[in-house]
Length: 147
Ligand code: FES
Image 1: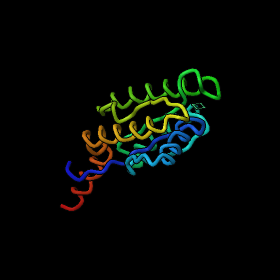
Image 2: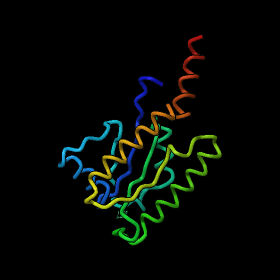
Image 3: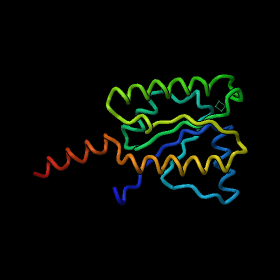
Image 4: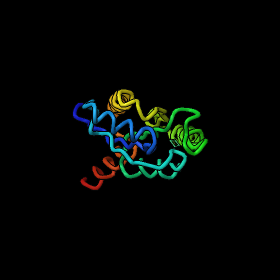
């Protein structure tokens, strides 16, 4: 996939990953514009349906970025999020998807560099995987209607 530019959704906790993204911006650290951030009060608020909905609406990759282990402002929201991510990865695997399209990450508010590097690495990984199966399916359906 030469010119493939993936669409990536990052559910970022307000207290850590979102602030880290802000810090990356303040430090003028660049990260791919492919990554669209959705700020959530805590990653514990991210439901499996939110993740599946992002894929259904065209995301090629999704990650949930929460506070470091033990640092969640709502006690165990990030632990619950990690469990949900693992659950959805299992569903994706059952569907025949590469589970690397979905990831859980942890970082503190001061980790601007980590946020930027993670966004770059995840984007590269999704570029290598190519468009999501949903997009490929839609493209195939479109081609069939054009025959
Ligand atoms: Fe950041 Fe819960 S407050 S993950």
